[in-house]
Amino acid sequence: MNRTCLRLVTLIALLALPEVVRPAPPLPRTLLLLIRTHGIEPAQVKVPPGPLFMVVHNQSTARHLQLSLGETGGNGVLTVTNKVRDIDLPQSKVSSKEMYVLTPGTYLLTEASHPAWNCKIIVTPN
Image 1 (cartoon, rainbow, N blue to C red):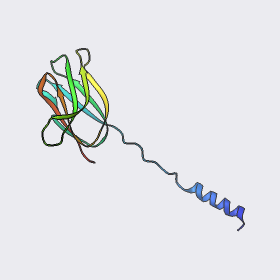
Image 2 (cartoon, rainbow, N blue to C red):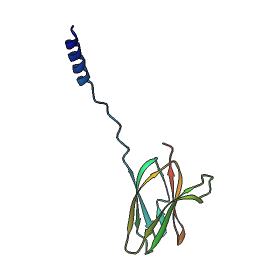
Image 3 (cartoon, rainbow, N blue to C red):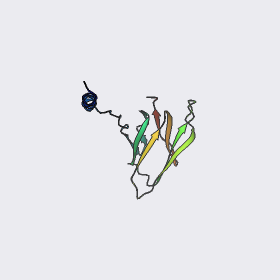
Image 4 (tube, rainbow, N blue to C red):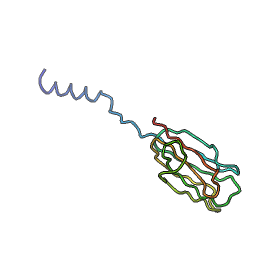
């Protein structure tokens, strides 16, 4: 086989190979949290690491909610050691929709005026 034929055969073989497929980034999970008159539902949830689209919907009679999402220390005590974000839900706003990328650990969503209203969010290692 001459060089031209060899190059042509090589080119045809390369074109026949499947394209290198890059894995798509993970799709965000959606987490719906409901604020009710007795607290936040669910009170605890486990999610995998990665993008998380969190929707917090106020179905309580409280008209101004001041929520805070923070990471706990991991020592078994639910005390926030690292605040991630404050979420303000004034009377004119019924829900909050935010994208988060949470790393493995335990997080706590709390409401300032109602200490018993909280949701423990556990981000699993995988």
